[in-house]
Length: 142
Ligand SMILES: [Zn+2]
Ligand SMILES: [Zn+2]
Ligand SMILES: [Zn+2]
Image 1 (tube, rainbow, N blue to C red):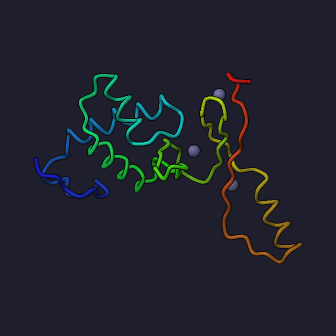
Image 2: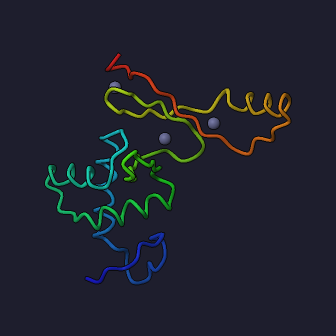
């Protein structure tokens, strides 16, 4: 099997879908969903191995890259410079991050548009986007 660069993975279905990749992607997504927190590729790989999933670290990296490009995972830069990945729903939303266990919950964006209006009015600052992360303790940890 030749190593191909990671692409969007939606083209060239005439030669048949890449079944192996599809299955590995499903296993990987299931592990991310169960984790419900940011994981580096290595951490995710370790979890997959502990579940007897036969998947190489290179495949984990490649699959995560594909998922990032398709918008199914969001990424974060860790203090040590590593990139970590979180399975995320599409569309604009925010995160509530538990500082104890690392659990991440999706939070809908509600009050931010009002802030944008306020900024535009008070500072004449034209808001083109925002990113918000809430920190605290999840239901299990508090
Ligand atoms: Zn999310
Ligand atoms: Zn927690
Ligand atoms: Zn928002």
